Length: 316
Ligand SMILES: Nc1ncnc2c1ncn2[C@@H]1O[C@H](COP(=O)(O)OP(=O)(O)OP(=O)(O)O)[C@@H](O)[C@H]1O
Ligand SMILES: [Mg+2]
Image (tube, rainbow, N blue to C red; front, side, top):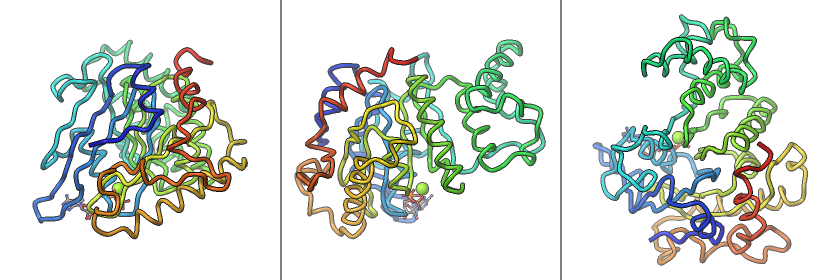
């Protein structure tokens, strides 16, 4: 069973039921590939949780199961304490952002962003106002008449995120959304996404290969082991929000990057799931007293909790 970090325990007390509760979820595909060993994971309201792990370990599969895009072979998922039938109700909306922007090339940015509202039958005036607000949030207000081919890769991803935000999601699921972009653009989009998360207070689950991206963005990083994927370890990034670019050049950032790098190395080379038996989420095996490195698990820390718990209502 899952072992929550102290920070998530505290969050649970502070803010209610899990947004997503993954219990013993496994996935075996029709061709026999077992993508996920039993996975236990709870995500609390307002968290920014990143899934990090070796290629092919099942990050996308897990995120897609959470989005309802693939059915688990075993185990159970709960969303906001209920079943899938309640997803989409007010306060329980989730949206998935793919690695590719997946825009309709034949129509303008504005129509691309309005698509989910058109499909939902939202009246045109209301939809237009929401599209304007969403484009403004991602800094594309002046590009609403452009076609996707007239945008840079980063701008196309912004459009994709605007299309997600226009639905006013409570849970945003992003699968390597900036993986194909250059580092400078990615850093900028990371900072903008983090600022949005801070302002809008939705819950985020984010998949990346980048240790630096994981440290910069996350309140908690879930490191997955090599296939079949399972939760190898959870590390709370106990640095206050709002975070700015300045965070990237702190010793704290470097120490977290080192900790994650070591953890990822271990997770990548691990074979059978016996090593962490009894502590599937790895909290018991988390590195501690790491010569000044932040201890993401033991440190779970009141500072991180305070930063998280203080998020609602802060600096809106
Ligand atoms: N539809 C499918 N049918 C069969 N096997 C699949 C299918 N989708 C994924 N897999 C396999 O499941 C495993 C996990 O895939 P998944 O895409 O979830 O990994 P990932 O961690 O997201 O990898 P990456 O970091 O490369 O995106 C891989 O071995 C993959 O080949
Ligand atoms: Mg993937």
